[in-house]
Image 1 (spheres, rainbow, N blue to C red):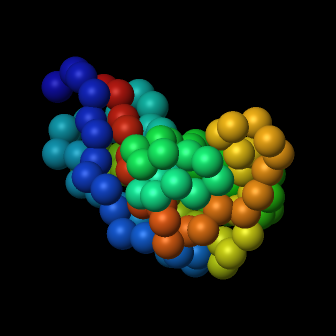
Image 2 (image 1 turned 90 degrees about the vertical axis):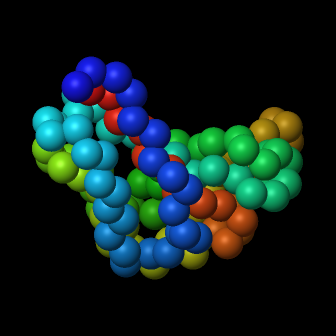
Length: 110
């Protein structure tokens, strides 16, 4: 079944966790993308802004991996992600995001 899948928002991000969502398509996706979705105004972002999870390795080595199969897509976080460093949206530098202010979301294309 071609098309795009968008997961519901997942609970607050935590390290050393495996996040899995069932996509229900019966075939592996061509690509998978995981993002953090802002729920507040953390680092000058507004609610709904998204940051790529792929940026984690730049501040926290060995973050885990992104995987998929015919039934699920997943994200494995190996570390305790207490210091994820991102650029501020307004371009005034960077900072550590407050993880409790963000949720996880997955996208996939079939």
